[in-house]
Image (tube, rainbow, N blue to C red; front, side, top):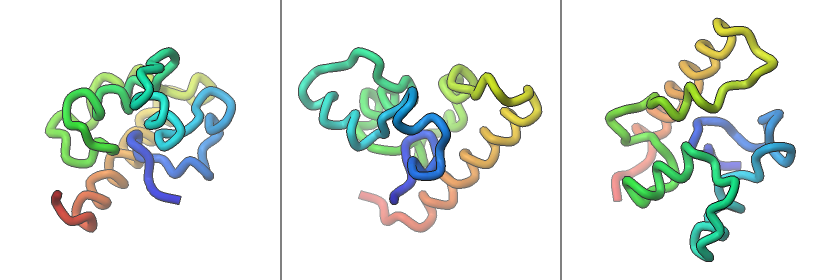
Length: 99
C-alpha cells in the first residue's frame, strides 16, 4: 500500500476504517464534491497543491498534523508520531520523481 497524505500507511493505521477511510477512497468523494468528514490533511493538500500527499509542502508538518492526533497517545508519543510521519513523507519525496 502507498503512503497516505498524512505519512501513514493505511494498512498499518489504527484509525483506518474506523475514523479514516483512506485518501484514495476520499479522493473519489473529492471528485464528486462530497467533502463532509474529509481528513483536513488530505483536504489541504488537494486544495493547495492538487497533490495526493504532503511531501513537498514547505509547511510540513503543518497545524493539521497537530489537529489530527491520536487521543490514546501521550503528548510525547504524538510528537514522535508526527516526526515519524514527517520523516516518511520527506523520504518518500526524495524517492518520488517530481511531476
